[in-house]
Image 1 (tube, rainbow, N blue to C red):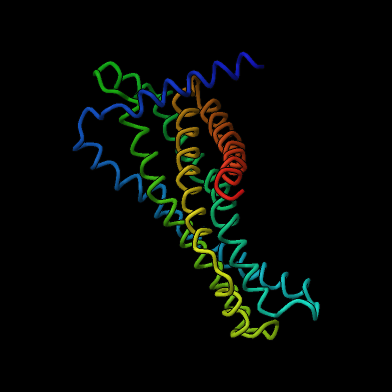
Image 2: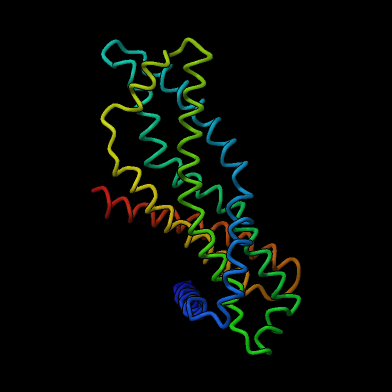
Length: 248
């Protein structure tokens, strides 16, 4: 098991070395990048908005109903929601969701190209297939992740505002005051930094499993599953490391 882990890590490092070499044709790279950003980032906006709004609503309602203590100020609900979204939910939890959606997409796309010998054809023509296929996906997702995290925070807070407006659980003034109270701008910076790393982890690990998916359709499905599982595990591991480095 240890030997397999070392072998897999070595293959991953070598693949990333090929991926981050100089592109054979910069014009092709810049033409591919917007397409990958649209496919991996813009097309996920809908699910990000929907989940973030509902989670903002749920967290606001749960916080209000479970902190009914006269010793706690009413504005604490907005403060708790804000810091929860900034520190963990919008960066880490949304990245885990994207690992399922985006990661499986990357692994299945590249895996299908592998089993249909399209990657072999690129290699025969002298094209650096790893750089050509994987680099635009990694850069595209890394560029999109901070924007998706920012959107998630905004939508989560909007969901909380909806609770304050349409229910009598908390007043809008108390909720907004809680959002503004003792705000630490670095928390947003911390969330953005994490999103860059998570974007790299999700795209690179998913591409790795797709790139080495030999066999048939069943193997592509297996590669997609491995991509989602391993990118999720690495996302959580890196989250622990970055929290220790950036916050403690």
